Image 1 (cartoon, rainbow, N blue to C red):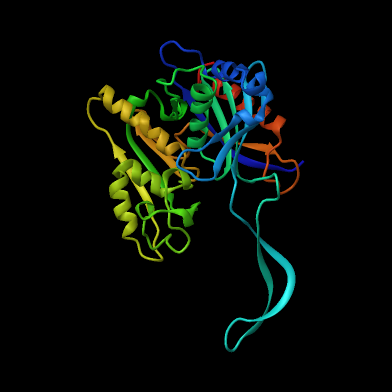
Image 2 (image 1 turned 120 degrees about the horizontal axis):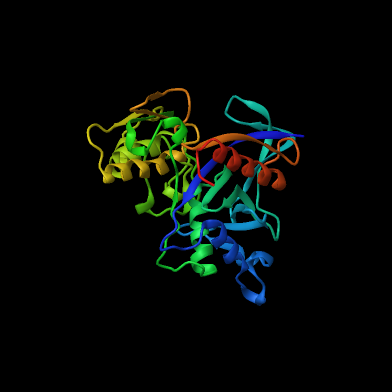
Length: 349
């Protein structure tokens, strides 16, 4: 059986005003009847969400299952336009310069076939109580998942009031950091920045353009929700803010990229506000797939492990090289992660 390792991310849902837990909210929301008098479980068209601030991207909650002990789903990030690059394995001789004739394969671009759309990313998620576990691939992001759940629970099903908020908080691994978040004195992140993949570049307005030598040959539009924030850029933004980060990125030369080793140190008596700010920073750091997060606290330094609560797990593939994960296996593996986290005291059942 073909398999691949993926990072399992964790978020804690913060209920408001004694509302139900995330699992029950999802279950209740999908029980709500949509068009045609059918519950959302039974009508996939009612589970399609238009992503704000994008022209052609949507998220569809495709496969969905009530596991009795949890709610599990598969989301697809789809795009209604664009082309797929293809290499046509048919050799041809072409003149590539005044002195060169080369044999090449032709490049082609193909639109999605009729009644289909390109999948630009996947996310598999599991809600147990107020615990949310997910695995994402390609251009899918945790923010798209949060936006989708916000839309599903507030707008589409109305099981949450419009004034409410779907607050999904990343957590530090208490078994690693050695105590309460307030005990953390130093937080360090290391990682490199790779070229940013950007979509909808051709449709950007002047006000949306970020002119940087590192990306301008491949894209003219950089938006928070359209970029794969993987490594150094979000670390710098979390520490310096967007304005100063943009100024730094704008100054980079053609062959330059960010390599960051950032540190936040808190000394002296802790306040509730500083605790909250440190906790909020976990959300920024949790999406750094390749970043390494280190902490120093009253119990010493964490030097070999990731301080963010997440873990890598193997998942079965339908076949070798597949872009998809096997639905039932993901459900089993995410439930296994939940059980391990509870057993190890990382989260409460």
